[in-house]
Each structure stands twice: as structure tokens, then as C-alpha cells.
Length: 129
Image (cartoon, rainbow, N blue to C red; front, side):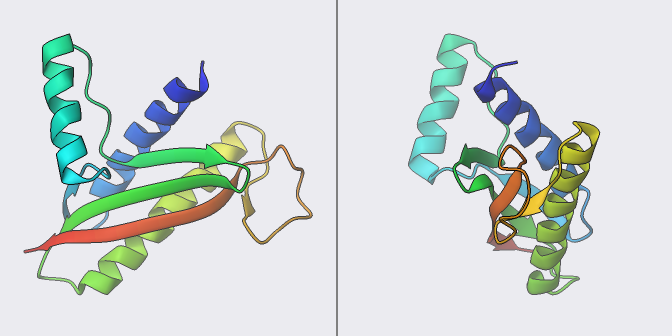
């Protein structure tokens, strides 16, 4: 599987993980609104599948995830965001274990350099309620 395909598959998995967090009502594309609209229009015209809304990228620091969500007004937004962050980090760790790799935090430099590390997880709230 190519790296873009792996990132798309991971993004789809993470979208399901995020949507399962209590207090999350919806996920939105992690791209800026105008770019997301253009991408969606191109997907319709070219008849290609639309990428999952969760943004996943890899660089020298590890895996970075960007999530934009709508949260319920029944639970504090900060609490929901923390739960989303923890769910994403937990899923990345489980994925690394299933693949036989050690998961590392960005500050743990004693781990095998080939191991996936979590560089950053960004959770943004686009809407409350």
C-alpha cells in the first residue's frame, strides 16, 4: 500500500474513532473551507472518492493529525476536545502495536527511529450545539 493510501485509510479509521467520542456531533474537513469546497467539487466532476475529513500527514517528527469537529452543548467543549485527542493518540498507539511497531511520543527519542511517533494532534471546534 502506498503512503497516500495508508494515510487515507488511517484518516478514515480516525474519523470513525472521533465520531464515536461522546459529545462529537460531526467532523468537518480539516482543510480550509474554500479548499474543501474545491476538492469536493473536483471529486464529483472526476468521480473520485472524497477523502475522509480527518487530516493525516507524516514527516520527520512523526504522524500529525488535524481534526475539526462540531460538539454538543451537553458536554464542555474542552472536555470533548481532550477526549478526542486521547482517542486519536490511543488509536495511533494501537495501530502501531498491531503493525508490530513501537509507538513513541514526539519527545521520546530513545525509540527505534523507524517507529511511528505522534508529532501533534490538533483538535479544533467549528461549532457548538
